[in-house]
Amino acid sequence: MSNPSLLILAGDGIGPEVMSQVRRIIDWYGENRSLAFDVSEDLVGGAAYDVHGVPLTDETMEKAQSVDAVLLGAVGGPKYDDLDFSVKPERGLLRLRKEMDLFSNLRPAQCFDALADFSSLKRDVVAGLDIVIVRELTSGIYFGEPRGIIQEGNERVGINTQRYTESEIERVARSAFELARRRGNKVCSMEKANVMESGILWREVVQKVHDEDYADVELSHMYADAGAMQLCRWPKQFDVIVTDNLFGDLLSDAAAMLTGSLGMLPSASLGAPMANGRPKALYEPVHGSAPDIAGQGKANPIACILSFAMALRYSFDQGDEASRLENAVEAVLADGARTADLLGEEGVTPVTTAEMGDRILAALD
Ligand code: NAI
Ligand code: MG
Image (cartoon, rainbow, N blue to C red; front, side, top):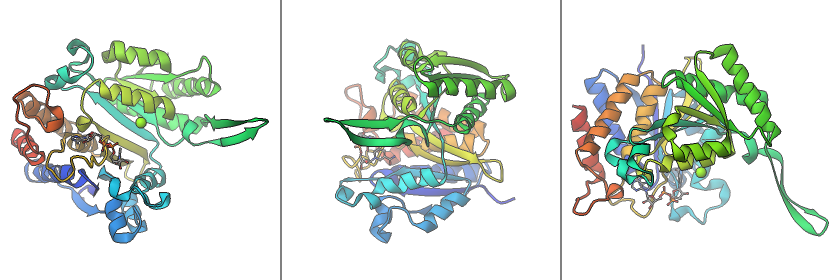
């Protein structure tokens, strides 16, 4: 059997810097765990624009559709700010998400013990936290029609429409239940069924999918506003949260910040299963291209490294190997290694991007 395939799109700014550390880790798995990948690399974002005049070529798009998983660094930067909207670096990423139909966005909020004092919440509330928010990513109010700003009598009216079909709700619900089975076996679905019809349908469909195919998973429902409160009060009550595009946008950003730095946050975006049973998948850190620190060796590679750990777990069924990598990160942090974004205490000298990579590789060994 051939090796699983990975397409690496490092992108712009700190993207290539953090991705080069991931490359070393991928190689480590090939050499030490007989887990070899067929890795190809290509351009996205400003890097692609510089060479091809577009932020993603059709050829790269085709490659992305044919591999088992795509790993992306980051796109964008001030150099491209004045470009026409149609060729802006971000359009490359949007095209990938749209054409791969990545409807399920997984945003973990995981708090490493060594960083618990970084949180704005008390150590007790966040230490050991490990939850995932599943955000519906391709429908809902950001896409619903009608939309626009129209004239009505003497004034203008801004309009957006929240719209979900049963099949859109069903597929993201399935993805949340599948995820829960690999974790704590618990799903909390959040909507506003008390004031929104789309929320009533959401709740009904999630319940039906549960009862028919996932009765072994513990399911609860919560209004999204109450959910926001519970996330701040006692986030450890959750395992997997599934919610729509708009609520998921807000709740996942809030949950992420429970755990500290942007440089630590991975994500996955999953689509429908391919012929080999694996979901279409794009893994990327939550952060952007960080132009303020790009090229200085200051970037924290952990968000990108943990995104690769998610790929191991969710695309390649290598949960144990994913844990091995997460444990290595945890050990290195416990040992006091800090990139500049993680400096709290006085008198600590930050490690560089490559040194953080060195330490994680050493911990893997
Ligand atoms: P950003 O995430 O690039 O940076 C925000 C702040 O966090 C900066 O101070 C940066 O230095 C810091 N930071 C981010 N990642 C870090 C890391 N790994 N290690 C240490 N510090 C880190 O967001 P910003 O500044 O709003 O956007 C910069 C560019 O990135 C823009 O062109 C934006 O459009 C693009 N962007 C791209 C995203 C993507 O590729 N998915 C997501 C967000 C923004
Ligand atoms: Mg957001």
